[in-house]
Image 1: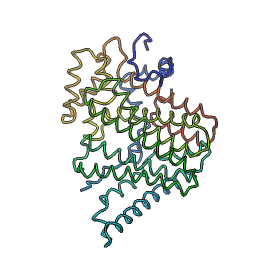
Image 2: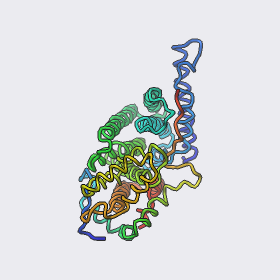
Image 3: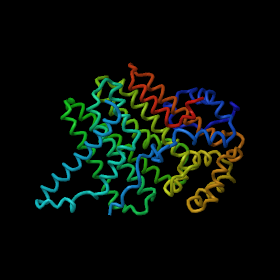
Image 4: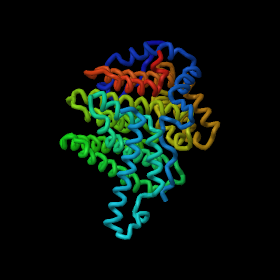
Length: 67
Length: 335
């Protein structure tokens, strides 16, 4: 990864201590150097998986009609 | 207390509270006991209760409480209140996004008010848990502050629409998801006996966890949309907002056109996904969309983790909080 490339800033600089972004980018370097498709697969392929189909991070079925 | 009995207790608390309040109202207003005529829509309670068992977030309150040395039993009515508020927010979001065509907006808005005030009643029931009255007032204040802040989130969301800038995005996400999950962890932590400085670590943990969850949801909305609701909000997701912020002028109009057409045209969605994957979209001076989103997710994961590590104690509840954090987007944890 090229360190001279710029990131857009997050809105609250106090919430993200200086150097955090560079440190995280360095730590995630093996992930960030994957081809785009492989990176996307890594991001989507885990964690949000729901083996039982219940979409665990949603927690809600469609609401009732309420009418 | 372990997670399953905790969730069962939250389920029972909401159910009892709902029926007690509905019956109380019916006796006062309708001596004949015609509850159905004055109750909130009957399907609403089932929907709220079903979500208790599906929610992976409710244990946050238990873990934060126990991490601070609090009694897990006191976390039950607080978690019930948080869940009712979560359900209200979810309902409101569905109406705003037009996600559920069969949902009557007026009924849904009415239901959100009912759920919000039932949450308040759940907090008031803490007086039976031997919690000091001052602490109960503090908890109610924490809920009301977070609710007020969260209301500003969707308002901004609606105002910015598809013109959301990157700064707007971070402001809205902090006010919505950040504030909501900060509330869960703060409220749980407030049930222990530690000072505010210690509670603030859990608040910060929840704040960054909430933002990480939103980033994760945004990725899914673009590349694994669950329905029309996700597609209708594409213009407000981090991948699109970032691309719009850094893309060359000629690319921006193409991007906007695809965002507009994607909900109704599968080909437009596929083209949008490809465009967001293409490094050329953002120009030579900026990080690619996926790189930017990944690093931002990594930042919020790290800040949440640091907040937790800054707490004075460490026990099994902290491990559980960390495990929950790591489950949100494991890709940014493994490396």
